[in-house]
Image (cartoon, rainbow, N blue to C red; front, side, top):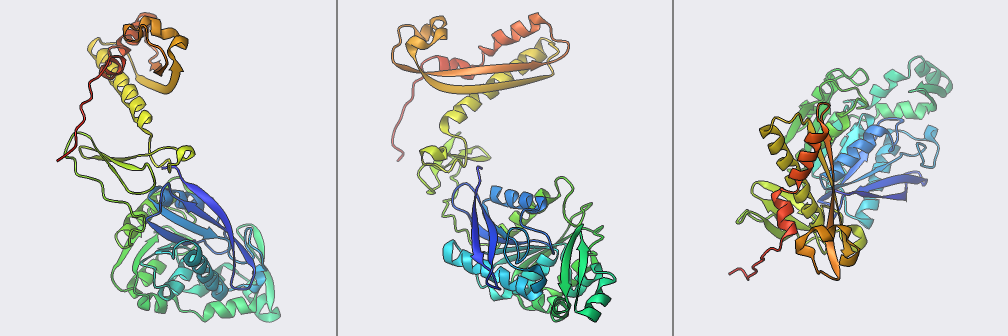
Length: 414
């Protein structure tokens, strides 16, 4: 699916303008999700971007933003605390509720996970909550301040280095952390919960996941992010987590997309409108399900291949399969076939190849022109092998169908 995004701002809990990004799927979203990043991180952290991209691919819209004083948001970080972060989340909820649709899914990473657990019970529209590497106690953060805690207690504030950056932490921040008991909120939030945690997380130990899971009521699930680091920086970790989140959340949300279900495979190919937009259609081929659409430039969502794209795919795949069958049968050392197909409408008189095709002799006006570029990989292929394979490409059944006239019989279904 082709996704898009909007850059927005909204007013945070302390009156500052907060920078946000709303990632949107192709077509109407099935539900909105709100993502809260980790302590001192930002909305544009690579794992956050990867997670949002994977969720939009699954049909969710995802709002992520920089908390007050972080990233591109206004405000002073030193004046913030856990309570203000939670209130920033509620401000984001209000923006979604007023401008799009209230979030049905909350996703929080690290301290952001504690924050979504803290506010979930206050948002009636939320149906599913997901935490990734979340601490069971908000004052878990102070363990990363080291000796600065004594300085803060003695002098009221101190500069703390976190992940190579320096932040001013004040006493009110520590006091506020100690005032919140995350597990108490978990026990009363009455939302479906998915706790995700790496067993080798050396920032927030996996025992935190056990505490959160134990405190929660059903429905609740735990998923181990085996081999993952705390920030999900290792390749594939964020996408893996997002795919699991999409499956989990889809079980509990109310689908807002308005998409009609795919039809049953009553024929070899069945196409039916989704009722979303002007052109989006379900395509059912046996047990296979896909979407057909038009580009945004002509009023579609670009949520699937256009009809001529499917036709080009049929030609390309048939060509590749035909060459593979021939090469295997003739023992030709062909390693791999790649077929690139393009389609255009041209004037018959401008088509140089038309003279070689008896079906196009004498044609005038516009005709369809498919161009194939075939790559044949194999270090032991000879020039004779390549010539034979190129000639066999024209024997592809779809090639022959497109090249000849076809009879199309149409009738109304009973």
